[in-house]
Amino acid sequence: MAFIGLGSNLSDPVAQVSHALDALDGLPQTRVLKRSSLYRSAPVGFLEQPDFINAVAQLETGLTPRELLDALLALEHECGRTREFRNAPRTLDLDVLLYDDLVHHEHGLTIPHPQMHLRAFVLQPLLEIAPDCVIPGVGPAADMASRCEGQALERL
Image (cartoon, rainbow, N blue to C red):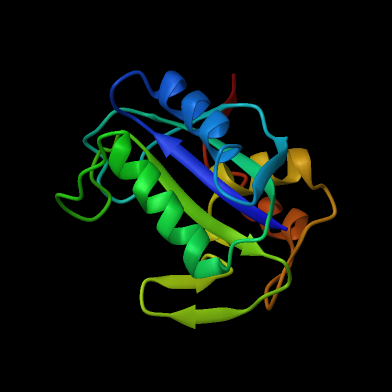
C-alpha cells in the first residue's frame, strides 16, 4: 500500500492532476484504491507563481519503492515536467508519501516523505481518504494536520 501526493500549477493544473490520477492506475502491478478530492493551495518556498492543485491517491502496488518512484518520475516527464530550480512552477509533481509502514532513505527517495507532516496540502487530502493514517516515526496524520491550520487550503 502506498500513498502518492500529486500537484500541479501549470498547463491546466486540474486536468494535469486528473490525468495523473488516471495514469497511476495504468502503472505496472498497480491500481488506485482511493483518490482524494482536488484542493487549491498557495505555493511554498518560491511564492511568485500560481496556486497549486493537489490531491492524494492510495495505491495497491507490487512495485518496489524505487520502481514506483521511477514510474512516477517517468510520468512527470511525459507530462512536461522540467526542474529549473527548487520549488519552481511545474506541470506535475508526484511524490511517494508513504509505502506501507516503511521508514527508508536512499539517494533521491525518503519514505515517509520528509516534509509531508508540515503541509496541509498533503495532510488534508490524505486524511480525506485515510482518516486513521499514522506517519511512521512522526505520529497520527490528524495530529500533524492540526498544526497546519494557518495554511490556506480550498477543497474544490
